[in-house]
Length: 152
Image 1 (cartoon, helix red, strand yellow):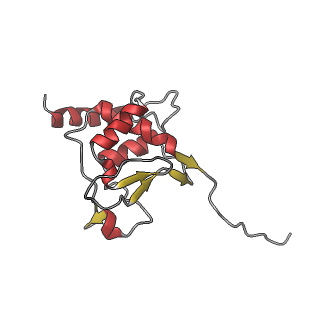
Image 2 (cartoon, rainbow, N blue to C red):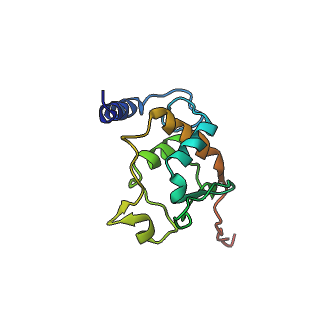
Image 3 (cartoon, rainbow, N blue to C red):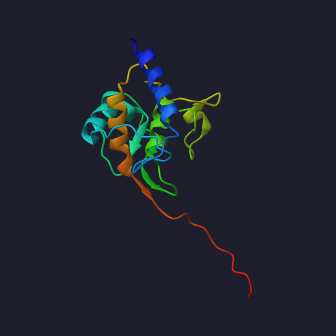
C-alpha cells in the first residue's frame, strides 16, 4: 500500500472515530492517536527542517546554514488550550487555520499556508511524536480582558 492510501485510510478512520466518547486527557471529542515520544518528535522536527520557518518558545534549536532566521514561533502563552487534535490538524492541514500575528505574505500565498505538506512523507509515528514534542511548550493563560463595572 502506498503512502497516499495509508494516509487516506488514516483520515477516514479518524473521521469515523471522531464522534466516539470515552476518557480523553489530551484531546477533545474523542480524537486520540497513541502517545508519541517527545525526543523522537524533536528529532523529526529537525530532520524535516521545521526549524527552517519555526522557532519554539523556550527551546534552543540549531539554525539552518544559508537560510534566514525562522519567523513563526510555536509554543508560549496562549489563551486557549492547543489540543492534540488541533496540533495534528495544523501539521497535516496547515491551511486550515493560518498563523496569526504575522504578515499574511509571510505565512501564506493566495490564502494557502506556505508550510510544506509532509503528508506523503511523514509516518504516523513521526506525526504523534511531533505532537508529543510540541504540546508541552504551550502555556494557557487567562486572556487580558477589562471587565466593565456597572453601577449597582
